[in-house]
Length: 120
Image (cartoon, rainbow, N blue to C red; front, side, top):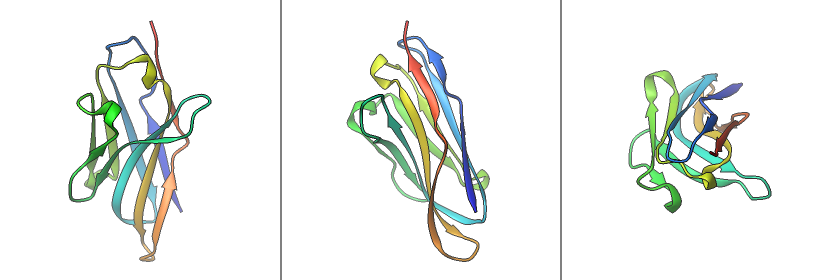
């Protein structure tokens, strides 16, 4: 089994910053890609950013220039640095990992989510 644990959410004022972390553990041979998604109340879950093991990161337009995703392959940990936060960034943020298991099977896992609230 593979587990993802997110941390770093909280309450921040508009214009502030937060750094989310997501640690993947369990029967992982290698991480292929990790991503951050978010879901605001009454809205569908949306993709925020992705980072592959090798290659270019991607971002949804609304966070470009403000958010930075990174991956520490040695620690199986993804980060999301969020700067210049806006009230519309308020959501539950979920981590997702696509991986190759120790049984050499492709798999995908989700974290439990961490709340980010941007409010004055």
